[in-house]
Image (cartoon, rainbow over all chains, first blue to last red; front, top):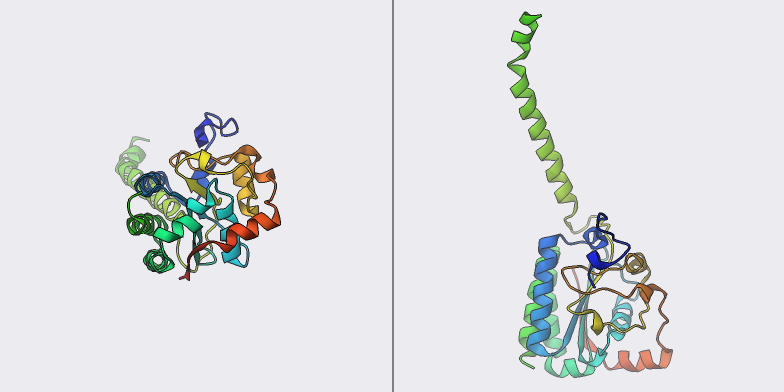
Length: 136
Length: 112
């Protein structure tokens, strides 16, 4: 289901996703990066961008637990206003994606975020995480 | 009357140019408003991206900020995924189950 398919958005209404932090081009890049990461690793990558309740780590872990297969999933949670980034890996994902590799990706992402490039940071971080995780 | 027209006629192109420039300036500022700038407040609807909607459990305990997005439904069209409409009202996980899953997680945290 897409935003355009939802009855509330209507044919003439503006999809709510456009009120999010990304424009159409950035959304397409993120979509492509997510699909590539999922396909190449066999894991489920997910990105949340929005406010995180304190403690932010706990909130990110709760979001991760809501995925269909949390143990095989990687959740990236970003709160631009709090300037917080959390990467959460499930038990199986963690075997191929150690915390050290996640930290490296996080450093790369926060470097882009500090320059104001949210989408670019997420895309490069996803690619880095998928690369570290390797083939499924 | 014709004297006035002769005086005003050359001003019309200048007026049009001024209008175009004004329009471009406003369009530019509207585009910039979307951009995130560290340290400045950045208001937007929270979003949650997945490559496929079936990868999200029905048991979503959506964050407060996302609830409004979920009610209007949708994760980005580009991401091809959407939160179920019932997501915002979804039940929270049993505390024990959630704790077990969280205990096995890894990853990293960072700030900028």
